[in-house]
Length: 101
Image (cartoon, rainbow, N blue to C red; front, side, top):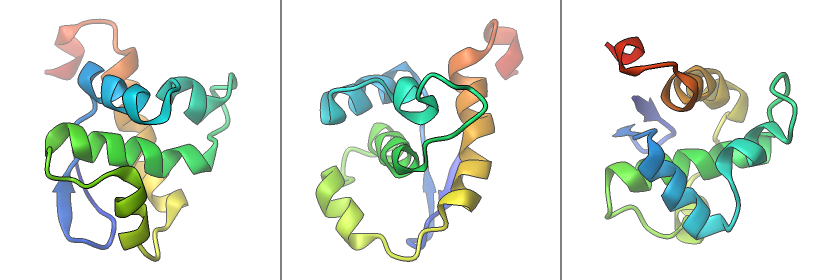
């Protein structure tokens, strides 16, 4: 998936590797952080963390979360989450490989 968060279009990789990157950086589970136990509600402070982990998983040159967050301005979390959440659901909750084809 590609997103534009004010720095031009960038690749965001959503995979098991992304989950590992997230867990290493934030010492928590991205799915739990996003949904807080309720799959009908999104916890918006987790959205930029998942975006960062996906960016980092796609490109090792992405700086640490703290540095990246300082450089990002004017991010519309509602808009980004509307793009991101369906992709997260497809990446992490699909039944089988054929769903991705």
